[in-house]
Image (cartoon, rainbow, N blue to C red; front, side, top):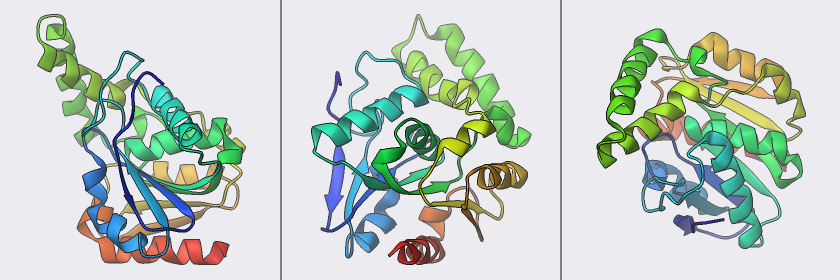
Length: 228
């Protein structure tokens, strides 16, 4: 790996890796790090070019972020983990679980999508417009270039085929909010294409882990308890 990823760490026990969403950092999981750190070894990463992790020179794509996760685990001697991803973090988690199924004990996918069509149009249209504008000025402005890269993740990625989800072998919980920016039909499609997955729809919007942590944490805890 050309960079070192920043991470927050809490607790001991089974490894639980947390992957945040687009433009965010590991701080998003403030209500999960403390809670699950009581019973798990929680590691919350800052994705490449997010938070305190440097951008580096590698491609700024969901596929690259999945490779970064692989390299991070190998470098730290982590052979297997429970992986919880939110939004783009869920997309990274899917890519990772498809390519490296043996490194995933369990998977929790919150607000992920297979492609841009999974996002409600009212949300996606401004993203696409912003991406076009930022891309136009990317060669002239470092800020525009960074913005174009961030928005590009939501326009050009993750491009996962539903049939690829059959390669995920780990027990999986798919979670979304009742008023999520991801279409409910799309979320249900993800769950339907992962063998023996469970689906939980929690009151709230896209940011249920942060805005409704009590119910979110309970759903995750119950799912993990069933694995024991």
